[in-house]
Image 1 (cartoon, rainbow, N blue to C red):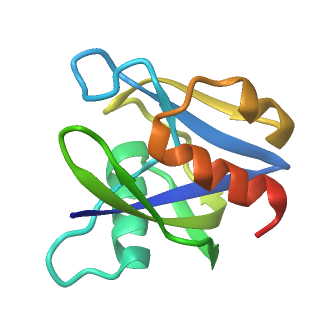
Image 2 (image 1 turned 45 degrees about the vertical axis):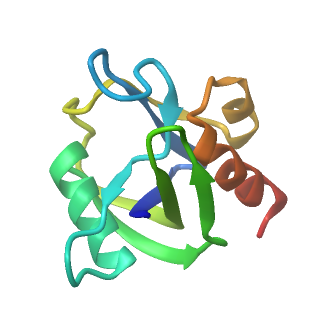
Length: 127
């Protein structure tokens, strides 16, 4: 099982969504940004590190959402989703080819990676 932290990042009432770039697994699909936990890292430390590395953003974690386990044909992942506030920085493109800030209600219109669909549902239901 692969452990992955992801963040629902809030800024001025909008949420950050990122689209996987061509050549990446799940290219063209939208996701909440984050990444794999490294040896000895907590999900919170991993998320803060990944968001800084991949997007050049500083965040503050507000709360955890329920964990999600999803089986893809190539691997089983366990997502540790967290709701976060944007503190500073403007997003840069590294693993993504599009970055948008959307109203929560507009997130449902995106074509999400499968593992993030329960995360979106948890957030929109207020869990």
